[in-house]
Image (tube, rainbow, N blue to C red):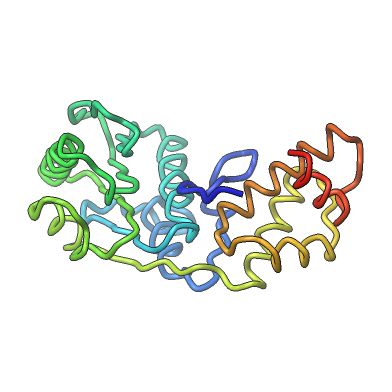
Length: 228
């Protein structure tokens, strides 16, 4: 199975509630407070937040979950990703901006990100960004790199096996799948630790089980790998 740069969320889309924090509780609690999950009012602080960690640690899940939460509150959100070759100009109606996979930004995207940062700071709008490297090591222009690092910085870590097991179980339940423990054991011991790849595998198993009208079993996993 190929490695994914983007963590695949559940059918309802990534949410802060569906994020299995494991060792990343501090980052999750910070973002919950920032968007206003819980009894306290939303911070929506203009101090930037930067998440970093290797692929599969849930960075994109958290960014998309924050964007969804802000949209539910009626806010417009700017979104910048390496796939957006021609970034739009900063929109003053935006309540916040999200920047994902910043380590891959082209010079054009870096210029747009810097412009968004300046406007967001001037208008006291929030910035939440993510990348695979700590701010000081990002291959970006200096003025952008330093701005990404001056606020709240959280390193995300891969989940251990019990936490990955919980994620697979939660995802299967959301899809209405019966996922036996022996299948979870088989998948966890033979496939990537990358959570995105495990979620992609579960999506493929879901589709294959529906097409073949078979229950999720270890023979089904083997059959899918041989025939897909």
